[in-house]
Image 1 (cartoon, rainbow, N blue to C red):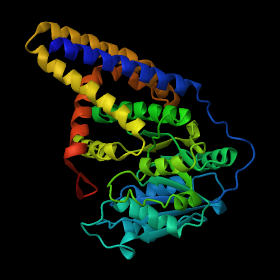
Image 2 (cartoon, rainbow, N blue to C red):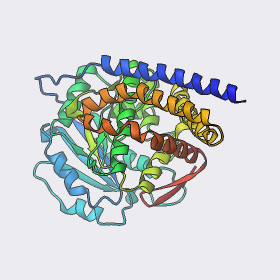
Image 3 (cartoon, one colour):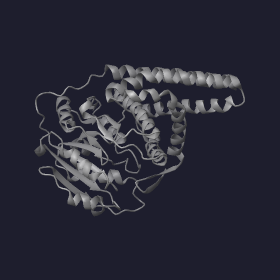
Image 4 (cartoon, helix red, strand yellow):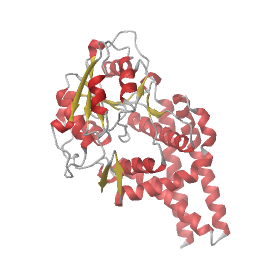
Length: 383
């Protein structure tokens, strides 16, 4: 039994090493987009679903107001998703000269009931229906943007005639163990996202920084057939558009396009977020990404099983530590290259020491994403 387990463990590690090397090579090969001198002219509708975001609304609008993209070429549509705080009141009160802000209330379109799986999809859909822009850009209420954010997205869209654009996201406020851990984990995900989209290996993205043609959204019938899934307003929609336009889906690699978002405030919130992300793993039509996720999950389970076996046999402790070192050596160059792009290389000194924590969280979040439940924005969601 043990020799068979060792063989499986080693085989998974070899396949994983090949996969990470593939991502690393693709990341390094992917050219950074250079903003052209010519000003883009596409009209953009920025769509934001907000629920209980009173602490973030003012900074959000200020960051949007600071955009250097001409104010006449973008509108901001914020959909209040049944907030129980002062989000809606602030949206009514705050005004910025020239910034086109259109606040909407989701309760004017649908009531809050237990029969709706994804309010965020409903909110985004409501915003898109009210939008006038050719290009839809979605983000979150706790995000902040470089002043050239929209200008860079618009220029990239026009240069590539893109139908869907995944763009970079990272965290701010890296002052605690949890925030550092989240940032390093997210750097890995961003590197995989960019590499996989660039090579058209599989589709990945994050809803905090997306752009897609409004016409493409309607052409694939929006969130139809994926609206029974609580999560997936980003990746599941991306795959629908990818199937329609496989050569028109891109990752925008440019520092000015980076969106910064707030990390989870505590471990409970963090696990709920990651369980929410994991809950859609078996709903991807793109089976390549499912196989990647399965590989990662099985490898981490092997580490757990090996750690348990180490309590009974000393040689297993040596094996697990050796393979853990191999895992660090496999991942470090890739994540470090991504960290350099995001200006977060200083965090890489913590990377080796956070591996056991990462293995444990991956196993727990993956399991509960399939068989458990989670809470998000004050709502309890079951699988």
